[in-house]
Length: 287
Image 1 (cartoon, helix red, strand yellow):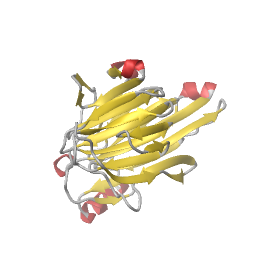
Image 2 (cartoon, rainbow, N blue to C red; image 1 turned 135 degrees about the horizontal axis):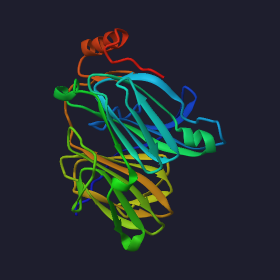
Image 3 (tube, one colour; image 1 turned 180 degrees about the vertical axis):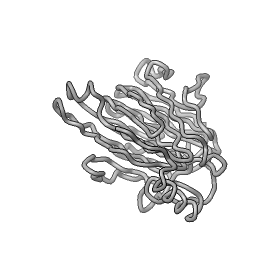
């Protein structure tokens, strides 16, 4: 396998998002997007006692992209302006299509509030092509039991396949454009060769631990690596027990206009999104 070389290495910036502390390796001043991936927020791990909500994201709108939540620990209750509710538990994934517009909230689940515990996850924003930006809103609650696992390196590597085909298996997420999403857990010494279609853009985000890339340099937690499209994949070797998120996708290659929670192709469309939200065209959120 011809291994990809590194285009950019970014360390997470620590941000306070309305009381929720997140680590943000994308976007940065150096990397605006890794088409079709627009934003990555790593929240937690945060341990709290009963009655505390370390997430507490109230109602807010989205249009023109897909916000995806990978929940590693904790419990989240999702509600939206179309009357939907979804409950995420540790290991679950929520793949939401904002499409033409939706208002939703993400708060700690009743069970988590009752017992307390550790909350940790990743929220990823994936762009939609122009032809699908006004699709009907929808969401997929993908339970942990539905996510196929690929075990390698004598049990030292576990790959959970959330989206796309990989090594003979298929992830459960339905996507508008070709996407590969793998959650990797590696015990110390574990080794894997990650196969990526050559035309896909690809990135690696290390949540925890230390991983050696391509039998060369090692990188620690809260680091994102963006690859050049010059090979068939890359190799990972765990120097310590580690967790990583592997993302790859076919680039959309269209103009991008973004303001806060709206991702469109032109500034005019951004203004239309703001107007539609103010006029109630994204639905009514009821607590």
